[in-house]
Amino acid sequence: MRLNDGIALRIHHARLIDGVSAEVVDDAVLEAGADGRITYAGPAALAPEAQDGVRTIDGQGGTLLPGLFDCHTHLGVASDRSLVEAALLTDPVMGVLQTAERLSRTLEAGITSARDLGGLPAGFRDAVAAGLVTGPRLQTSVGVISHTGGHADGTLPSGKDLGLDYCELADDVVGVRTAARRMLRAGADLIKICTSGGISSAHDDPDDQDLLDEEIAAVVDEARRHRERPVAAHAQGRAGVLAAIRGGVRSVEHGFGIDDEGCDLLGEKGAFLVPTLSAVFQPLDPRTTTPWRYQKKLRWNERAKENIAAAIARKVNIAVGTDAGITPHGQNLFELSCLVELGMSPMDAIRAATSGSARLLGVGDTLGTLRPGYAADVVLCTEDPLRDIAVLAAPQNLAMVAQQGVVRKLTFPDASPAAGRNP
Image (tube, rainbow, N blue to C red; front, side, top):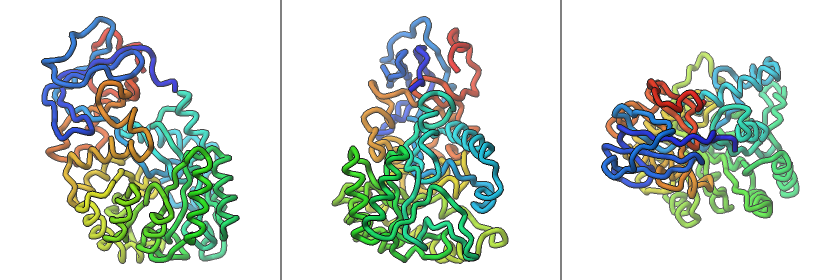
Protein backbone atom coordinates (compact mmCIF):
# COMPACT_ATOMS: atom_id res chain seq x y z
CA MET A 1 0.00 0.00 0.00
CA ARG A 2 1.29 3.45 -0.89
CA LEU A 3 0.56 4.80 2.55
CA ASN A 4 3.89 5.79 4.04
CA ASP A 5 6.27 8.37 2.62
CA GLY A 6 9.25 7.50 4.77
CA ILE A 7 8.89 10.21 7.43
CA ALA A 8 8.79 9.23 11.10
CA LEU A 9 6.03 10.73 13.25
CA ARG A 10 5.85 11.88 16.88
CA ILE A 11 2.71 13.14 18.65
CA HIS A 12 2.95 14.57 22.17
CA HIS A 13 0.93 16.60 24.69
CA ALA A 14 -2.08 14.27 24.41
CA ARG A 15 -3.91 11.65 26.43
CA LEU A 16 -3.94 8.17 24.92
CA ILE A 17 -6.59 5.47 24.61
CA ASP A 18 -4.96 2.40 23.09
CA GLY A 19 -8.11 0.54 22.00
CA VAL A 20 -7.54 -2.48 24.25
CA SER A 21 -6.74 -1.41 27.80
CA ALA A 22 -9.28 0.20 30.15
CA GLU A 23 -6.54 2.58 31.28
CA VAL A 24 -5.94 6.05 29.87
CA VAL A 25 -2.47 7.62 29.69
CA ASP A 26 -3.07 11.26 30.56
CA ASP A 27 0.25 12.65 29.32
CA ALA A 28 1.35 10.47 26.44
CA VAL A 29 3.67 10.31 23.48
CA LEU A 30 3.17 8.23 20.35
CA GLU A 31 6.01 7.61 17.91
CA ALA A 32 6.01 5.82 14.58
CA GLY A 33 8.95 4.93 12.42
CA ALA A 34 9.48 5.73 8.76
CA ASP A 35 7.74 2.43 7.93
CA GLY A 36 4.52 3.65 9.53
CA ARG A 37 4.68 1.24 12.46
CA ILE A 38 4.30 2.38 16.05
CA THR A 39 7.56 2.26 17.99
CA TYR A 40 6.33 3.80 21.23
CA ALA A 41 2.93 4.63 22.74
CA GLY A 42 2.84 5.43 26.42
CA PRO A 43 3.68 7.91 29.18
CA ALA A 44 5.70 10.94 28.17
CA ALA A 45 7.96 10.38 31.17
CA LEU A 46 9.18 7.11 29.67
CA ALA A 47 9.25 8.15 26.02
CA PRO A 48 12.47 8.23 24.02
CA GLU A 49 13.91 11.65 23.31
CA ALA A 50 12.68 13.39 20.17
CA GLN A 51 14.99 12.93 17.18
CA ASP A 52 15.79 15.28 14.32
CA GLY A 53 13.92 14.75 11.05
CA VAL A 54 10.78 13.49 12.76
CA ARG A 55 7.45 15.11 12.03
CA THR A 56 6.27 16.32 15.45
CA ILE A 57 2.69 17.24 16.19
CA ASP A 58 1.58 18.95 19.40
CA GLY A 59 -1.66 17.28 20.47
CA GLN A 60 -2.65 20.34 22.52
CA GLY A 61 -4.23 18.25 25.25
CA GLY A 62 -6.45 16.24 22.91
CA THR A 63 -7.12 12.50 22.94
CA LEU A 64 -5.28 9.99 20.75
CA LEU A 65 -7.31 7.01 19.58
CA PRO A 66 -6.60 4.17 17.16
CA GLY A 67 -7.99 4.76 13.68
CA LEU A 68 -11.65 3.76 13.86
CA PHE A 69 -13.59 1.23 11.80
CA ASP A 70 -16.94 1.21 10.07
CA CYS A 71 -17.75 -2.43 9.39
CA HIS A 72 -21.01 -1.79 7.51
CA THR A 73 -20.96 0.92 4.88
CA HIS A 74 -22.35 1.46 1.39
CA LEU A 75 -19.85 3.95 0.01
CA GLY A 76 -21.15 3.55 -3.52
CA VAL A 77 -24.64 4.58 -2.41
CA ALA A 78 -25.62 8.24 -2.02
CA SER A 79 -27.16 9.09 1.35
CA ASP A 80 -28.61 12.41 0.20
CA ARG A 81 -30.99 11.13 -2.48
CA SER A 82 -33.13 8.10 -3.20
CA LEU A 83 -31.93 4.89 -4.82
CA VAL A 84 -34.31 5.63 -7.68
CA GLU A 85 -32.68 9.00 -8.38
CA ALA A 86 -29.18 7.63 -7.98
CA ALA A 87 -29.84 4.61 -10.20
CA LEU A 88 -31.74 6.35 -12.99
CA LEU A 89 -30.63 9.97 -13.05
CA THR A 90 -26.91 9.97 -12.16
CA ASP A 91 -24.25 10.04 -14.86
CA PRO A 92 -21.84 7.10 -14.29
CA VAL A 93 -18.76 9.34 -14.29
CA MET A 94 -20.38 11.62 -11.73
CA GLY A 95 -21.19 8.53 -9.69
CA VAL A 96 -17.54 7.48 -9.59
CA LEU A 97 -16.38 10.95 -8.55
CA GLN A 98 -19.09 11.21 -5.90
CA THR A 99 -17.96 7.88 -4.46
CA ALA A 100 -14.37 9.17 -4.32
CA GLU A 101 -15.58 12.23 -2.42
CA ARG A 102 -17.46 10.03 0.05
CA LEU A 103 -14.30 7.98 0.62
CA SER A 104 -12.36 11.13 1.48
CA ARG A 105 -15.11 12.47 3.72
CA THR A 106 -15.36 9.16 5.57
CA LEU A 107 -11.63 9.14 6.25
CA GLU A 108 -11.75 12.71 7.56
CA ALA A 109 -14.54 11.59 9.92
CA GLY A 110 -12.01 9.32 11.65
CA ILE A 111 -12.70 6.06 9.79
CA THR A 112 -9.33 4.71 8.66
CA SER A 113 -10.69 1.23 7.78
CA ALA A 114 -14.08 0.24 6.40
CA ARG A 115 -15.97 -2.80 5.20
CA ASP A 116 -18.41 -2.08 2.40
CA LEU A 117 -21.37 -4.44 2.20
CA GLY A 118 -22.84 -3.79 -1.20
CA GLY A 119 -22.47 -1.30 -4.01
CA LEU A 120 -18.71 -0.68 -4.03
CA PRO A 121 -16.68 -2.35 -6.80
CA ALA A 122 -13.33 -3.83 -5.83
CA GLY A 123 -11.59 -1.24 -7.99
CA PHE A 124 -12.14 1.41 -5.32
CA ARG A 125 -10.40 -0.80 -2.76
CA ASP A 126 -7.47 -1.19 -5.12
CA ALA A 127 -7.41 2.52 -5.95
CA VAL A 128 -7.14 3.40 -2.25
CA ALA A 129 -4.39 0.83 -1.76
CA ALA A 130 -2.48 2.23 -4.75
CA GLY A 131 -2.80 5.81 -3.50
CA LEU A 132 -4.92 6.93 -6.47
CA VAL A 133 -7.70 8.14 -4.18
CA THR A 134 -7.75 8.91 -0.47
CA GLY A 135 -10.04 6.92 1.79
CA PRO A 136 -10.25 4.22 4.43
CA ARG A 137 -8.57 0.88 3.91
CA LEU A 138 -11.31 -1.19 2.35
CA GLN A 139 -12.79 -4.63 2.34
CA THR A 140 -15.78 -5.01 0.04
CA SER A 141 -18.43 -7.62 -0.60
CA VAL A 142 -19.00 -5.99 -4.04
CA GLY A 143 -22.62 -7.18 -4.03
CA VAL A 144 -25.46 -8.73 -2.04
CA ILE A 145 -27.13 -12.11 -2.54
CA SER A 146 -30.87 -12.45 -1.92
CA HIS A 147 -33.83 -14.40 -3.28
CA THR A 148 -36.41 -13.13 -5.75
CA GLY A 149 -38.65 -10.68 -3.90
CA GLY A 150 -36.15 -10.54 -1.05
CA HIS A 151 -34.27 -7.67 0.53
CA ALA A 152 -31.85 -7.18 -2.38
CA ASP A 153 -34.48 -7.35 -5.12
CA GLY A 154 -34.49 -3.92 -6.77
CA THR A 155 -37.92 -4.40 -8.37
CA LEU A 156 -40.27 -1.61 -7.35
CA PRO A 157 -44.00 -2.09 -6.62
CA SER A 158 -44.65 -0.71 -10.12
CA GLY A 159 -42.81 -3.69 -11.57
CA LYS A 160 -39.91 -1.52 -12.73
CA ASP A 161 -36.47 -2.91 -11.94
CA LEU A 162 -33.84 -0.44 -10.75
CA GLY A 163 -31.18 -2.59 -12.37
CA LEU A 164 -28.83 -2.50 -9.38
CA ASP A 165 -25.88 -4.47 -10.72
CA TYR A 166 -24.59 -5.27 -7.23
CA CYS A 167 -27.74 -7.19 -6.29
CA GLU A 168 -27.61 -10.90 -7.09
CA LEU A 169 -30.88 -12.85 -6.99
CA ALA A 170 -30.70 -16.61 -6.47
CA ASP A 171 -33.44 -19.09 -5.58
CA ASP A 172 -31.80 -22.46 -4.96
CA VAL A 173 -28.55 -23.99 -3.77
CA VAL A 174 -26.97 -24.03 -7.22
CA GLY A 175 -28.02 -20.42 -7.75
CA VAL A 176 -26.48 -19.11 -4.55
CA ARG A 177 -23.23 -20.96 -5.20
CA THR A 178 -23.07 -19.41 -8.66
CA ALA A 179 -23.87 -15.97 -7.26
CA ALA A 180 -21.13 -16.31 -4.64
CA ARG A 181 -18.66 -17.31 -7.34
CA ARG A 182 -19.60 -14.22 -9.35
CA MET A 183 -18.92 -12.04 -6.33
CA LEU A 184 -15.56 -13.69 -5.76
CA ARG A 185 -14.69 -13.35 -9.44
CA ALA A 186 -15.46 -9.63 -9.13
CA GLY A 187 -12.86 -9.36 -6.35
CA ALA A 188 -15.00 -9.65 -3.20
CA ASP A 189 -13.16 -9.91 0.12
CA LEU A 190 -16.23 -11.47 1.71
CA ILE A 191 -19.73 -12.55 0.71
CA LYS A 192 -22.84 -10.74 1.87
CA ILE A 193 -26.17 -12.54 1.95
CA CYS A 194 -29.67 -11.68 3.10
CA THR A 195 -31.18 -14.12 5.59
CA SER A 196 -34.13 -11.88 6.42
CA GLY A 197 -36.32 -9.28 4.80
CA GLY A 198 -35.71 -5.65 5.54
CA ILE A 199 -37.16 -2.35 6.62
CA SER A 200 -36.22 -0.54 3.40
CA SER A 201 -37.28 -3.25 0.92
CA ALA A 202 -40.75 -3.16 -0.61
CA HIS A 203 -41.72 -6.81 -0.89
CA ASP A 204 -40.83 -8.37 2.46
CA ASP A 205 -40.63 -7.81 6.21
CA PRO A 206 -37.76 -8.15 8.71
CA ASP A 207 -39.56 -11.13 10.25
CA ASP A 208 -39.41 -13.02 6.93
CA GLN A 209 -36.56 -15.43 6.33
CA ASP A 210 -34.78 -14.72 3.04
CA LEU A 211 -32.25 -17.39 1.98
CA LEU A 212 -33.12 -20.89 3.18
CA ASP A 213 -30.95 -22.81 5.63
CA GLU A 214 -29.43 -25.02 2.93
CA GLU A 215 -28.72 -21.97 0.76
CA ILE A 216 -26.94 -20.20 3.63
CA ALA A 217 -24.82 -23.29 4.23
CA ALA A 218 -23.94 -23.47 0.53
CA VAL A 219 -22.71 -19.85 0.46
CA VAL A 220 -20.68 -20.32 3.64
CA ASP A 221 -19.11 -23.46 2.13
CA GLU A 222 -18.37 -21.66 -1.15
CA ALA A 223 -16.71 -18.78 0.70
CA ARG A 224 -14.71 -21.18 2.86
CA ARG A 225 -13.33 -22.96 -0.20
CA HIS A 226 -11.99 -19.64 -1.52
CA ARG A 227 -9.26 -18.78 0.98
CA GLU A 228 -11.62 -18.98 3.96
CA ARG A 229 -13.57 -15.87 2.97
CA PRO A 230 -16.07 -14.77 5.67
CA VAL A 231 -19.81 -14.31 5.15
CA ALA A 232 -21.84 -11.40 6.50
CA ALA A 233 -25.61 -11.67 6.76
CA HIS A 234 -28.20 -8.92 6.57
CA ALA A 235 -30.42 -10.35 9.32
CA GLN A 236 -33.01 -8.17 11.03
CA GLY A 237 -35.76 -10.44 12.35
CA ARG A 238 -35.31 -13.36 14.74
CA ALA A 239 -35.71 -16.11 12.11
CA GLY A 240 -33.06 -14.59 9.87
CA VAL A 241 -30.70 -13.97 12.78
CA LEU A 242 -30.87 -17.56 14.02
CA ALA A 243 -30.60 -19.04 10.52
CA ALA A 244 -27.53 -16.91 9.78
CA ILE A 245 -25.64 -17.86 12.94
CA ARG A 246 -26.50 -21.56 12.65
CA GLY A 247 -25.37 -21.44 9.03
CA GLY A 248 -21.89 -20.28 10.00
CA VAL A 249 -21.77 -16.59 9.07
CA ARG A 250 -19.03 -14.46 10.61
CA SER A 251 -21.26 -11.48 11.35
CA VAL A 252 -24.93 -10.67 11.82
CA GLU A 253 -25.69 -7.25 10.35
CA HIS A 254 -28.43 -5.24 12.11
CA GLY A 255 -29.74 -8.07 14.32
CA PHE A 256 -32.75 -6.05 15.44
CA GLY A 257 -34.72 -9.14 16.44
CA ILE A 258 -31.92 -10.90 18.31
CA ASP A 259 -32.95 -12.61 21.54
CA ASP A 260 -31.28 -14.72 24.23
CA GLU A 261 -31.07 -17.71 21.92
CA GLY A 262 -29.35 -15.59 19.29
CA CYS A 263 -26.92 -14.18 21.85
CA ASP A 264 -26.10 -17.69 23.05
CA LEU A 265 -25.44 -18.82 19.48
CA LEU A 266 -23.19 -15.83 18.81
CA GLY A 267 -21.09 -16.84 21.81
CA GLU A 268 -20.96 -20.50 20.78
CA LYS A 269 -19.90 -19.68 17.23
CA GLY A 270 -17.59 -16.77 18.05
CA ALA A 271 -19.56 -14.62 15.62
CA PHE A 272 -20.12 -10.86 15.76
CA LEU A 273 -23.13 -8.58 15.91
CA VAL A 274 -22.93 -5.33 13.91
CA PRO A 275 -26.03 -3.45 15.12
CA THR A 276 -26.04 -0.40 12.74
CA LEU A 277 -27.92 1.64 15.33
CA SER A 278 -27.46 4.83 13.33
CA ALA A 279 -30.25 3.55 11.08
CA VAL A 280 -32.48 2.96 14.11
CA PHE A 281 -31.88 6.36 15.69
CA GLN A 282 -32.12 8.28 12.41
CA PRO A 283 -35.59 9.90 12.12
CA LEU A 284 -37.55 9.52 8.90
CA ASP A 285 -39.81 12.12 7.34
CA PRO A 286 -43.11 10.49 6.27
CA ARG A 287 -43.43 13.09 3.51
CA THR A 288 -40.24 11.91 1.77
CA THR A 289 -40.07 8.24 2.82
CA THR A 290 -41.74 5.38 1.01
CA PRO A 291 -44.80 4.18 2.97
CA TRP A 292 -43.55 0.64 3.50
CA ARG A 293 -40.24 1.81 4.91
CA TYR A 294 -41.83 4.38 7.20
CA GLN A 295 -44.39 1.95 8.64
CA LYS A 296 -41.88 -0.83 9.20
CA LYS A 297 -39.46 1.55 10.89
CA LEU A 298 -42.19 2.68 13.27
CA ARG A 299 -42.91 -0.95 14.18
CA TRP A 300 -39.27 -1.93 14.62
CA ASN A 301 -37.51 1.01 16.23
CA GLU A 302 -38.28 0.38 19.90
CA ARG A 303 -38.11 -3.37 19.43
CA ALA A 304 -34.62 -3.02 17.95
CA LYS A 305 -33.42 -0.76 20.77
CA GLU A 306 -34.65 -3.18 23.44
CA ASN A 307 -33.07 -6.22 21.78
CA ILE A 308 -29.71 -4.58 21.05
CA ALA A 309 -29.58 -3.17 24.59
CA ALA A 310 -30.08 -6.71 25.90
CA ALA A 311 -27.32 -8.00 23.62
CA ILE A 312 -24.98 -5.28 24.87
CA ALA A 313 -25.78 -6.31 28.45
CA ARG A 314 -24.98 -9.91 27.49
CA LYS A 315 -21.56 -8.68 26.23
CA VAL A 316 -21.75 -10.44 22.88
CA ASN A 317 -19.03 -9.65 20.35
CA ILE A 318 -20.01 -6.30 18.87
CA ALA A 319 -18.29 -4.52 15.99
CA VAL A 320 -19.25 -1.07 14.79
CA GLY A 321 -21.09 -0.40 11.54
CA THR A 322 -23.33 2.45 10.50
CA ASP A 323 -25.18 1.46 7.29
CA ALA A 324 -23.79 4.70 5.80
CA GLY A 325 -25.52 5.20 2.49
CA ILE A 326 -28.79 4.47 4.23
CA THR A 327 -27.57 6.82 6.99
CA PRO A 328 -25.49 9.95 6.24
CA HIS A 329 -21.92 9.58 5.06
CA GLY A 330 -19.24 11.39 7.04
CA GLN A 331 -21.06 11.16 10.36
CA ASN A 332 -20.03 7.57 11.06
CA LEU A 333 -19.01 7.95 14.69
CA PHE A 334 -22.54 8.89 15.71
CA GLU A 335 -22.88 5.11 16.00
CA LEU A 336 -20.83 5.18 19.21
CA SER A 337 -23.32 7.57 20.81
CA CYS A 338 -26.10 5.13 19.94
CA LEU A 339 -24.24 2.23 21.55
CA VAL A 340 -23.65 4.26 24.70
CA GLU A 341 -27.32 5.29 24.85
CA LEU A 342 -28.24 1.60 24.89
CA GLY A 343 -25.94 0.79 27.78
CA MET A 344 -22.39 0.40 26.49
CA SER A 345 -19.69 2.36 28.31
CA PRO A 346 -17.81 4.98 26.25
CA MET A 347 -14.59 2.99 26.61
CA ASP A 348 -16.27 -0.22 25.43
CA ALA A 349 -17.81 1.64 22.48
CA ILE A 350 -14.36 2.88 21.47
CA ARG A 351 -12.91 -0.61 21.83
CA ALA A 352 -15.75 -2.02 19.72
CA ALA A 353 -14.91 0.52 16.99
CA THR A 354 -11.19 -0.20 17.12
CA SER A 355 -9.74 -3.51 18.34
CA GLY A 356 -13.11 -5.29 18.28
CA SER A 357 -13.86 -4.31 14.70
CA ALA A 358 -10.29 -5.14 13.70
CA ARG A 359 -10.85 -8.69 14.98
CA LEU A 360 -14.01 -9.03 12.90
CA LEU A 361 -12.16 -7.94 9.77
CA GLY A 362 -9.26 -10.29 10.47
CA VAL A 363 -6.71 -7.51 10.95
CA GLY A 364 -6.50 -7.49 14.74
CA ASP A 365 -2.78 -8.23 14.66
CA THR A 366 -1.94 -5.04 12.72
CA LEU A 367 -4.74 -2.48 13.24
CA GLY A 368 -7.13 -1.19 15.89
CA THR A 369 -4.58 -0.75 18.69
CA LEU A 370 -2.02 1.91 19.61
CA ARG A 371 0.83 -0.34 20.68
CA PRO A 372 4.34 -0.95 19.33
CA GLY A 373 4.38 -3.00 16.16
CA TYR A 374 0.92 -1.95 15.01
CA ALA A 375 0.28 0.31 12.04
CA ALA A 376 0.13 3.96 13.07
CA ASP A 377 -3.51 4.55 12.19
CA VAL A 378 -4.23 7.38 14.62
CA VAL A 379 -7.03 9.86 15.28
CA LEU A 380 -6.59 12.93 17.48
CA CYS A 381 -9.79 14.30 19.03
CA THR A 382 -9.69 17.78 20.52
CA GLU A 383 -12.06 16.70 23.32
CA ASP A 384 -12.31 13.79 25.76
CA PRO A 385 -14.71 11.17 24.34
CA LEU A 386 -14.83 9.32 27.65
CA ARG A 387 -16.57 12.35 29.15
CA ASP A 388 -18.85 12.84 26.16
CA ILE A 389 -18.81 10.19 23.44
CA ALA A 390 -20.83 12.49 21.18
CA VAL A 391 -17.77 14.65 20.46
CA LEU A 392 -16.51 11.96 18.08
CA ALA A 393 -19.54 12.34 15.82
CA ALA A 394 -18.53 15.86 14.75
CA PRO A 395 -15.65 15.68 12.23
CA GLN A 396 -14.52 19.19 13.23
CA ASN A 397 -13.50 17.74 16.61
CA LEU A 398 -11.04 15.40 14.89
CA ALA A 399 -7.93 17.52 14.46
CA MET A 400 -5.77 14.80 12.93
CA VAL A 401 -6.26 11.56 11.06
CA ALA A 402 -3.24 9.44 10.09
CA GLN A 403 -2.96 6.17 8.21
CA GLN A 404 0.18 4.12 8.78
CA GLY A 405 2.00 7.24 9.88
CA VAL A 406 0.88 9.42 6.96
CA VAL A 407 -1.14 12.43 8.10
CA ARG A 408 -4.27 12.66 5.97
CA LYS A 409 -5.96 15.46 7.91
CA LEU A 410 -4.48 18.07 10.25
CA THR A 411 -6.25 21.19 11.49
CA PHE A 412 -3.67 22.15 14.14
CA PRO A 413 -0.75 24.40 13.12
CA ASP A 414 2.24 22.27 12.14
CA ALA A 415 5.64 23.86 12.61
CA SER A 416 7.58 20.61 12.24
CA PRO A 417 10.58 20.80 9.88
CA ALA A 418 9.25 17.74 8.01
CA ALA A 419 5.71 19.10 7.70
CA GLY A 420 5.98 20.18 4.13
CA ARG A 421 6.99 16.70 2.96
CA ASN A 422 4.06 14.75 4.37
CA PRO A 423 0.70 15.04 2.59
